[in-house]
Length: 140
Image (cartoon, rainbow, N blue to C red):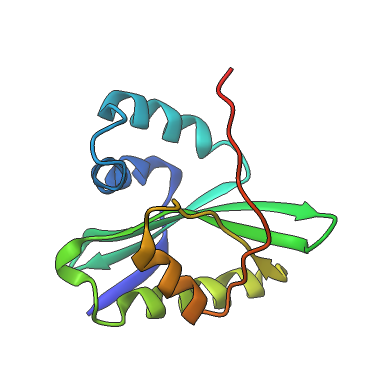
């Protein structure tokens, strides 16, 4: 039986291996741990999918109010272990997220996905997401 829940701040290191896989090892584990330790003290929560107590899926949730969408949440670093994909678990996870954030008073969900991640594009289209623009990044 799968469980969907928000991690306590003290449990955040549970998702580091998943996010490491998501980023294909491009970000060192030590860097991820330091960043997550900082993130949990911001407008951030971390949702997970547990299978018998083991984290097999993750989505960060960033909260803010935007002038064009109102109170919104941004799922970030969404990842489900490969062996669990294609079974409707992502849809169940997002339904849980929609319900969770709606109960907190949020009215919109928006996200970014890598341009090369075609499977995620199909998933988000099927979830009713629309493309509004491009996401740009400049490292300082």
